[in-house]
Image (cartoon, rainbow, N blue to C red; front, top):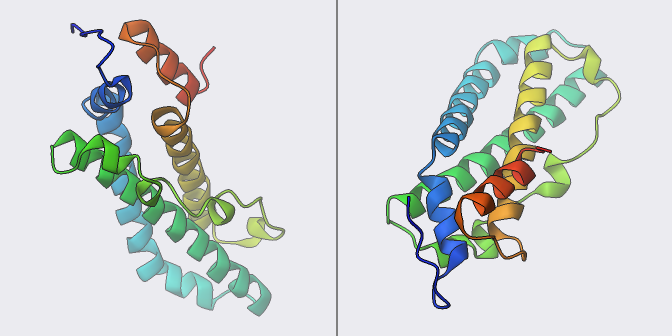
Length: 169
């Protein structure tokens, strides 16, 4: 893919557009939407019965952690849908970089492990771990794509962005 390197070129936009057109974005998008659906099915179905069978204190923890997993996934899904809108031309990259479209609720979503989580149903523990992983990856991507650092043009710049986002060496 040829990149035009001129003083007028908006490298930030190019980086965002190239990311949203990538296989990595599609995989992340599909993973996020599947996890939203899986979590909703559990929380609205078997999760209700699982919560009823828990001791009162653990049931309260279940309620709090189910809200945390839901918040993470709604924030992740919103972010992914904004990026897809950019790719499809329904939103311009400048609008997508606005704070209102950035990944939010970090104080809730990055919250540390709470005592007693190991007493929660295994399915909820799994959903918590997977949603945390997804949210953290998207947070890294959000920082790379919309942070203050100017991206490096060309393939090297894209590789550096991916390495930074996914903890490469």
